[in-house]
Length: 198
Image (cartoon, rainbow, N blue to C red; front, side, top):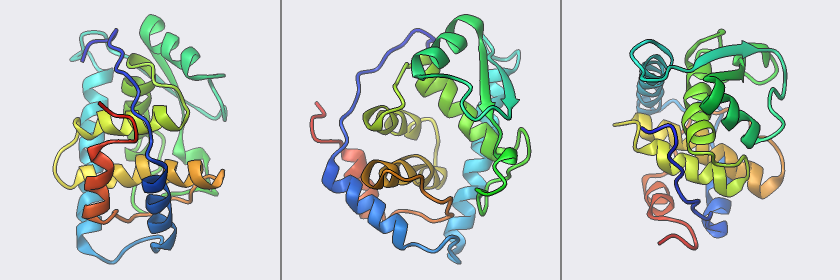
């Protein structure tokens, strides 16, 4: 993926975002469905692989990731993007430092699967593609990153990006971390596009 690429924003469909948020809110913190465990295992493995491709010498312009305790290392998405594009550095708040918000299945050690997922998201969607941190920026990021993953990992990614952000958009509150998957029909409807997609 080119470091100077900027992809147009997609617009969130408000009605679908409310449906996603409601389904996520009604789900248990961790599902007993073996498909959920398999999806998160695939997401963890693929996020680690993508992280390695973006941050090691295998990358054309590797990004150095620094895990920090600073709650907000960047004032906005533009500052993050400039750091990634021009300095090739990304600061990420490690999940290990959020003791009151631990994910049921994603490893939360410094540099673990949860950190890798966050770093890949920030490098690609906010750094290179310059998507803002708002609802349409995060929705667009999910659409883009969906194509970077494969198999069941895509379903877990939808929970981590689209479902959690839908809760924030519709309620104004951070979602708790859950290990659950959106219903396939709802996920397909969300992937078909937002209100003003071409």
